[in-house]
Image (cartoon, rainbow, N blue to C red; front, side, top):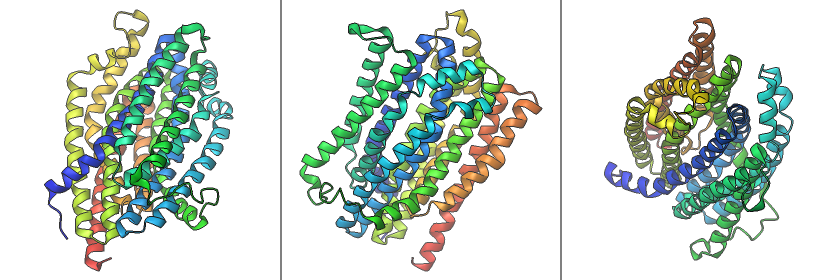
Length: 453
């Protein structure tokens, strides 16, 4: 059965709107952390940025694996299998806890790796301070993401938005109190930023769990019953789909982590400017990320119900709408880069002048690749809704690491482009991914419709 594009867009916006708000709220937490780093000192900003990039590289794999929860629950929901959806949600929580433990152990032993990659010792030391308590946020945050995938797949994403927004406000207030030493609290610096993130993440997970427990809309999905005995088939199914999703997330964020390492080799000014520009770009990227999650749920719902024409329409509507939104962000970066950087750093402070100028130049480059960045992540979401993550992983691996990373290195060091050259390399990798993933979705849908599978 065909679904009109306008009807599908309305349904997508109802689902994706709260998810976009949730993504923006999460990014605001990261932005708050960056602002607090800048308030401590330029050195704290550089070292904290290195720590944040390292945390993202490790934790993003876990988030990718957990993303399989929403995809598979949506497919089960489309086929009317409520018991199967419940088992997958339970297995998702167990998977989240196991991944959190492994990621925390990796982050606590990261200093030698950063030094091996040529990072300056003072930046590595600051990154270590930032990562002392931050890994404690992972159990709560991954649990929240598993429950978010479950409730969003049921078409109920508004509570995710509300809890995320409250968490963002609390994150700012607690961070401010610890940075300034308010109410008799100690000034914990970078370590305090990690502590606040951990406390707020646990609070968000508990709040969403209580909502699901008490709201009658979830009565048909008794997650608490049998939670102590996870379904091994459900765990294996989540892992089979989640592993390549996590791998895709890792190679993408790994590209930006590689860029951060290049900046670290170039110097602290380049690393700090990269961190500021990346936070601005990352904030805009939360919009297509939220849309991508919504598209995955919509495509998965139709796929589970066997309505392939509607699944294709959902993917096309999402990709087209996302491209339009990102074109608007590209114009914003091109026209107002100084004002955007000024949200983070004081233009009147001479200590930040070189960082500000370089960050503005990086945003001018970002204006060229924002369109492709949005398209590629929504195309990924469309393909994953078809229970296919292997394709997205292979395309991402090729475009990011065979094109993006080598070009970034050549442009920066061999051709003397410096920090701006690194970002032009990123632009080429993302453009390649956008084209290839969009074509892959169309090809896969055409083949499935022709076969009636």
